[in-house]
Image (cartoon, rainbow, N blue to C red; front, side, top):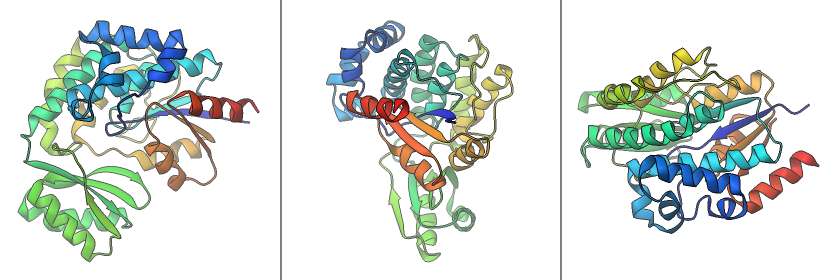
Length: 311
């Protein structure tokens, strides 16, 4: 028996043209883009389909655009009769998962993530923060490298993506120092990432405080499907927990590897990455070799996924 989980991508998955094929082909996907434009006050189709890479990279535009493309793909899957039994999302993707499970209203989520992106970018001036992906080194050794480099400033683990890939973040000089220590400890590779803010570190606590005021007036619905949270790598027990988790998420590491492990232990054996890109699919392949992994972002991937699931 298949036990299906939908997983939703985070920042970095964006590309010009995302969601266009599905919106052109399916009224339900087109409707999502229309609703997003209405909620946010600018043309979401123009942003996702026709803008530039540079414009899509602006955090306060990246976040609502990925959320919109992801929910458009999600709605098409529902229309095709494919429903999840559980959901999770990486960082920003957690908002898509919350929309999918019915906790957040889509229009509310679009507005909130626009502000989330703005607050995260504003909290640390450009050029002050950095992030780096450490490949081929155990989590313990990466954590050790961060501790050793912390005398130069702030550097912390930010994303536990999968075995052999952990992202660190903090102040530029401290990230560079920790990166060097990771190399000394045997990392295969350390890659500085093209982002200007140290997401998921203590440097973004202030952004979480600002985000808190955005979340205060929202109505949180009940969970239709179980959701595993980034901060705890565990199931959210009730929608009352959600606000606190979303505030903490901004300045806490994303426990993605443990989140997927939790779902696999719970019998999830089919994962569908819903939205732009295939980053999560690659992570999940490294976390478990015993699961089926599909993605839906355009007509070709939709067709392939439906063929496999219905075959």
